[in-house]
Length: 455
Image 1 (spheres, helix red, strand yellow):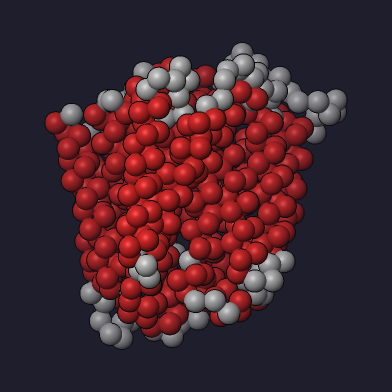
Image 2 (cartoon, rainbow, N blue to C red):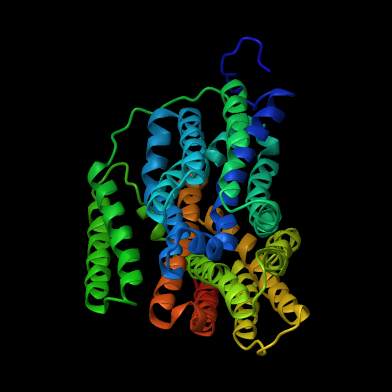
């Protein structure tokens, strides 16, 4: 390690080896943990609900709380990262994430667990916000593309192995160990980041407090409203309306800000805004399936957690395999074509899952999962490339923030839709309606993607 025990300054052309290698491992480890924990809890939700004596609809908030906290915090944290520097924000976020993992493992009831997951989501958001910035400081300019690719691949791999990791842990231990395993990894990431990440140069710029409050209130009310529609329709509609009204106020308030939280200049570009809408729809579709399928496989078909994890794994695993090919094709064909084809495949796969026979063989489930994974894999890379390149190079950081925000809004909305479905139909009867809803979101994303061909 760095013998001086001081942060290494970033060179004009990145860090020298081997410091660059260790810095990259530190950044990717933090990103890996944050993304892994956003998906690993899905498999354990039925076990958590049974162990803590909660309903499936309430247990969904173990996922929803994490996603909601991350979605609310992402844009304000991006502003704080510019104000105080990327390295300090990464260190604080990793510390919060690690401590919150301990609280999750010790949770005596569902309320405690959801609160700890909210705190964990805040910590995980820090790595999402500053990961790309740190990779840019670590890698030489001529190798920056490799660094960004590594960052994206880490997110994809952590999502892919999440179900299998969860299944393996649940095979030998209870669900609390899903969170306890973060403790040694979080400590390692913290120590490596402290020693090897380059020092940050803060920018003295004002923080948009009012915009932050509008952002938080609008997103929270919107998600709570969707969740409440299943058991209190009048309250749910009021919360949705209030959330949309506050988000409209946010957009109006942002126009007058010299340093807005929301990149209004980029959203005025049709290719950028349509790509963001496409991303939100696709991640909503994927999350609805990811969260609802474990309940169907375990409650509806009687599978154990290990078998459930193995049957879901082909979906994210195929995403990892399809991503390099879609990246190659994205240099030659418009995102409007590739992403539309991918989301069409995803919609078809989700529809096929909704039409599963009453007693399906494992292969009946696996080929449908593969079709969904191929579709999502072909959508993801071209769409992300369109978001990052549709604006000027000087706005790449803001585009990266909106890309992450779109992903998190989609996953948060997806978890809320599942809670709504469980409230309306019960966990045993909600699978088909939820998968049909997921297919509709994927089809909507494909339609938005096609709109880019005329943009």
